[in-house]
Length: 292
Image (cartoon, rainbow, N blue to C red; front, side):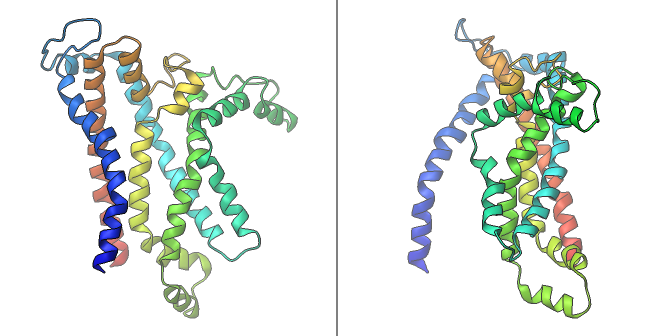
């Protein structure tokens, strides 16, 4: 057992080192910048809470934060579909290995390539409009990319499509850790398939639901790649797709206001922490209720 523990720690060391270098070190270095007017083109001065006061009165940041919070809507859809997919591929079906691989392909696909492909799908002369018009759902094509009420939803669909396979594999691991004796006992007692899933499978998956939900919420609030590739750093049209991550990037690398950008990042981190703690308590309480 001791040798196994040592081997496990040795495997973890490279990941821990990378985490320290590329995650924790930038966080520690970036925190003081939030209280300065640091810029590569000017002298740095300590400004105290000035950047945070500016953020609360910044209408563009307000719009970006609103879009980021709206983006959390993807979480329940993403988790429910992922669980159903995991239950499906956990069965002994023909070609089940093929379906597992097929569902996981979007995960290993480059987000840049995926976003560009979906951008073509959403174009006015794209494949989506073609099928909608062929089936008589639309009389004329819709500009999904420039409609303010549809643009953000289009990006959300890309996020769901990209993340399904990732969360499916986590849930699949959870399903395969559930003792089959419990499910078989329930079936012997007369429970049908859906009652077994609802009263046994889902409650035992609650730790995995908590993990995936937290990861999904953090990813949704910090969404960047698909928005940046599909709608640019301005969050076109009319800031309707602008998120906090994209806005912070623009402030830092277009306007070169790194101090203000660091303050925005810190505010978003605090919001993510609050939401994560609330979700953890709510989900944990729900999970304990199931077990009782």
